[in-house]
Image 1 (cartoon, rainbow, N blue to C red):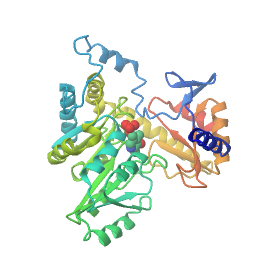
Image 2: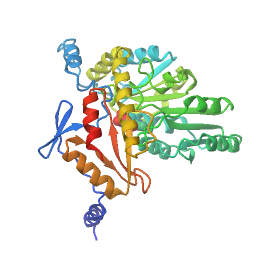
Image 3: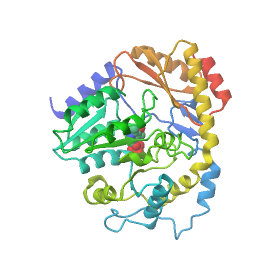
Image 4: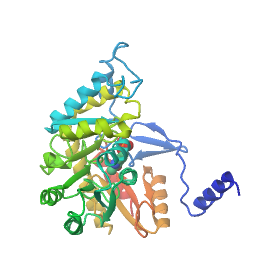
Length: 384
Ligand SMILES: *Cc1c(COP(=O)(O)O)cnc(C)c1O
């Protein structure tokens, strides 16, 4: 068989197993999506604060633009001529908001996670990563020279044993984890991880707040703000593509880390910087982030309502956030349930292995602050 025939065969196998992926032809209409002429409430979006869907915010931002300050391209890497003032302004704002020495922005969370770990690791580095970390972190680990051991999800006792066992044999150990996990919606005990890393001089902590930035903490800075440990996390990373209604990502860190990344991080050095207009929009949204606590509180309330209703229907969920799985078990059961809810007007998607462990196929509700109490009541009625 030639290569194209092999590709075709593999795709046929994916189709037979129900694992074939394709891009859904969605039409967006506010809080709703239209797919194959079916109009549904979007319960699968990462627009957690509902800001991407807020016309008044966009209108106010557009009024700040003129043909002279609207730059749709950086035309170059930041190390050449792409370092527009908008980049430095956003980084200054981030460092101030987080109270850190410095900040550095990237083109996406994927760029951040695949670039930082290879830059700061060498063959004398051991990475200890939670079993359920995001694919971008896995890829970053693979691109690095470090050795890696995965510990059981949120099993900090196992992580502590591994640190104790290995800290002597390596120059440094980096603990890699997330704050809110994307499939279970559970929240990490960051303070316990900080205590663990502080017991050893050569242990560093890397936390990805992709799902928590904007959503958690009094000012929306994430779980590290909520748990009072921003300054104790060596690599605190988050993305602008979710609650911040934009694109790009950040690290807040010490100045030496920022300078090191500027010198070593390939996914920063060898790519065109984000469009300055996009960076200006991110700054615009972040400047208003503390004001959105009513949205954060509303999101937390409707999340509790849904979680309690699911528990009453016999679906226990590990969720402690706005990401709420309904564990159906077999893949077929998850697909059928998702189909049924879609027919009833709720855009919910099934998640199956290998994304989640065998036997834990699920629907994944990703709630956003523009959903009303009434929407949630209708959803609860629709679930049996
Ligand atoms: C979404 C996500 C990313 C990727 O961020 P992008 O900005 O979309 O590339 C990284 N890590 C986690 C945990 C995520 O959920």
